[in-house]
Image (tube, rainbow, N blue to C red):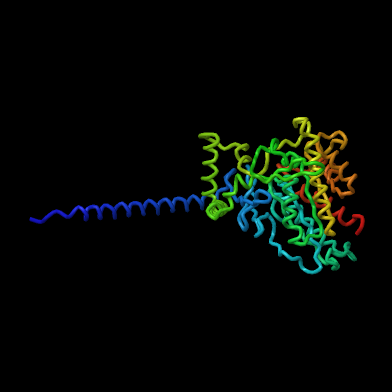
Length: 395
């Protein structure tokens, strides 16, 4: 009569079966995730995008370098890519090629222009148009004393940027890339994005009035310093390269914030982006904030302008008109534009306002806006800038 197998042998056999089942489940799970990844990449679903946020201790963040960026809404899908610096633009060398005049554009979602293909963005159009008319720049030299043979436009725009963030971004790149011209793209929500009370987020630097200048509150670094750790960077990289991981993370955030929801609303999608919910209309602001907010904008621009000019670079402001106010006379607009025009006139800062080019196009029924600028809106804005640049004083 044979003896029963020892208990240790039974336990060993059970352990092997458990490991085998576990491995099978893990493989099945990975296969399911792989299939889901393929499906999400092939089927355009509104609200499903890569979460390509990369924490930056100076500005708050940008895009993870060399990742895919997707803009989606019903009937529209635009696929772009971030460059190795984390901006939605082509690759650029740090040092300009000989004979190059470099123009850097700083600002928010209107600057990155994710709503249109890269070749239709205003900064790409500016570069193409100026190079097509390079003969009109004959005799001009860049700040390195070289005759201008070509123009290079560089985009440093990230959705949700405030005036302060754009200024801080410029400080990181102006000398590094040896820009000849610095352009700040002013949008109506920028003043509110400088102020915690209006922005409703604590994940970025803010500006505060201090004496006759301003101070930078960068306490977000203490609150979110863990985002610079290797494990958080690794997770961010995974999200930036996987729609499945991004979607799971986004749904978990929605679940934590709102509980179970059967559908994702436009507001939910906006909440997952880096843009702000700041109202653009000054009359809708708490009135006690209006004057302080604009004073803050002026002081940031004053410092920015001084630092750019001190290094022999040009500083220009390119305005984005608010769609609802384009046809309204400047003095009657419920916008920041009257203050901006007055400020630039007092400080002798060039201001490019494409409104005169927008009015006849919009009156003719042409689409300048659709969420942000359309491809035509980008082109007309670029046209206004190129016209100014070729005719500017002091050339």
